[in-house]
Length: 389
Image (cartoon, rainbow, N blue to C red; front, side):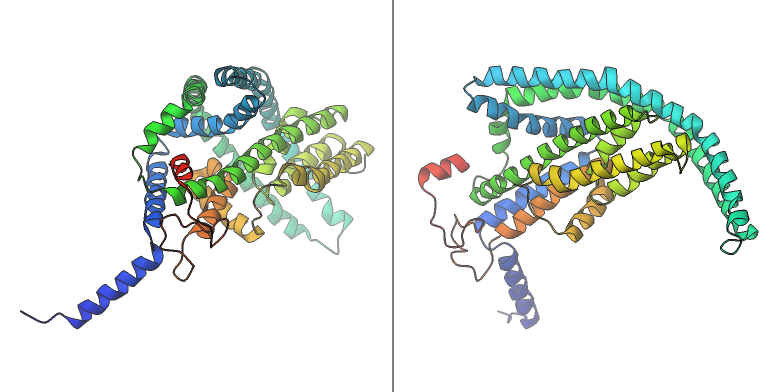
């Protein structure tokens, strides 16, 4: 019988050691399989099944309200019908009131862009006369050429967007009918669907259940708080801009609401359209422009100082670098939805890394080991195991 190859033996030992460190017990294997399955499913089928994923997310958000209604004493079916009715009222308001106004103001804004560009050109041409020592005529010409190229590129992009608008309208119609219907059935048949889904994942999933409990609290608080923040900023901005008689008040208010989706960046980006519209409407030196600038600053300050701490007091604390990296990574994968869910997805990653059993931790070989709460917690009893499964 030939002797074993020592190099092959060393490689086998290294691989075994690596596997034991990454997957130290059956709970870790189960969690890894579930994460891989969900990641592959979302990444490979996101284009085809986006209405399904959107319905799951909306049903997950509404489930928190349904649970609160049940806790208040309402039956499950009554809570589902009540919450779904409120949801459909919001959809009708969005589709038949808000979107037409925003679309009309967006068209008017686009039509005014050439006049705005011309006025900006005239202002730039006056700079050498006002500040001859700071800027020269040749430099102004370079700026004007760059500005003209950007406007031309913008016009071409608008034409391409208009050509693809029919496809977008068709997709919106599909979403409008399919998504609410699926949201209703996800809420109504929640237990039935979860039981059906659980039969396809490993039964040894106590660690997975504990990770989900941790993530569910943090993600639920974050997403529901983010929706509330969007609504509050939109409403307060619209009332303020309408009171100040600012043009495109609804469109700019929508920008104000959506800017919270991209932390640190959105507030900077929305500053230009708000102050730009105020400048082209009244000019720098007018009192109305100052009022708009001050009101805008107050709204942003109240959002950061008051609204965010109230809405996200229980949300997970992530470092600014982690948030930016998550936005870049998930936004590159899934576009708008990746940006919106970047922080919840980063929360999932953090919870998994925190809960993952490690060699050297006490009881890491225990089938019920999970270090979320305590590294030395006792194994759960039989009822807890049945509840987690």
